[in-house]
Image (cartoon, rainbow, N blue to C red):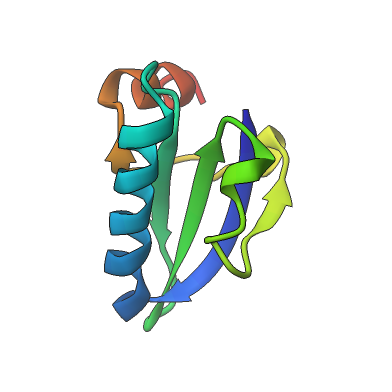
Length: 92
């Protein structure tokens, strides 16, 4: 799995979430893709994407690769499988 990060204005979160949900429905039958957030200084928010392959990255303009070590300690699930999210972040 590939992790990516970007700080975005709050008004962009909805369009990114819709794109993510469409991709997850089409390319992620296992439910491993995640979109998580951490509130930051207004008017921006930190978003992290978990994608199964780099081929899905192009529509997410401006997102940068990051490691699992760079993931936030207490993110909120925006979209994706709640069980997979809990497995990844419950012990952090």
